[in-house]
Amino acid sequence: MTTEEIVKRLVALVSEGKNLQAEEELYAPDALSVEQNGYSVTGLEAVMGKTKGAMEGMEAVHGGGIDIAYVGADTFLLHYKMDVTPKAGERMTMEEYGFYKIRDGKIAEEYYFMQPLAL
Amino acid sequence: MTTEEIVKRLVALVSEGKNLQAEEELYAPDALSVEQNGYSVTGLEAVMGKTKGAMEGMEAVHGGGIDIAYVGADTFLLHYKMDVTPKAGERMTMEEYGFYKIRDGKIAEEYYFMQPLAL
Image (cartoon, rainbow over all chains, first blue to last red; front, side):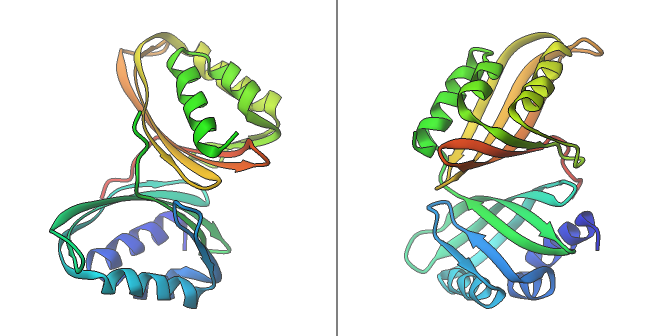
């Protein structure tokens, strides 16, 4: 798959709430996932475990998904904007950027950013 | 310097049009710069040469700069929004994202994204 094909498949699966299927299909076995605070996990199973935890923390996902995507050569950048109600809070708009690196046709690294710096 | 200090210094210098000084001060000698189409250069001199070329391609920079910044542990993400007149065109708003990686207190990798995918 080309980078653009990977991005389109990822966007389509996430829009259906199939984030775990997306990871199973598109991620490398040794994928690295890094949160903004530096917390990271390595390996598809651990990455999927983290995603599962995040999804289980939601009372409901009302709508939204990936609304901006930039396709690089072997990188891409996504913006998520989702209307959610977390189990531990009020209904809110959740925004997040993800930068991704591809190796051998699979997503090998992801870096998430959720909390902007006040400029 | 911490990642946040690097980002704040970079934002300040870019807001004064001192992009080359920012690179000289904050980038690693072997820094890698990658454009969205995959074109890349390695080494501070080459990175600065590319920046110099981009700046010389502008008739005028009317305003703008870095308007969004996310600070990670040893990564950061910036959004540039600038009001420019290129030498080869009309006045326009130029938007760009940059993802950056830090090693040993210096910016070691940068990846730019300018052209969004239609979703």
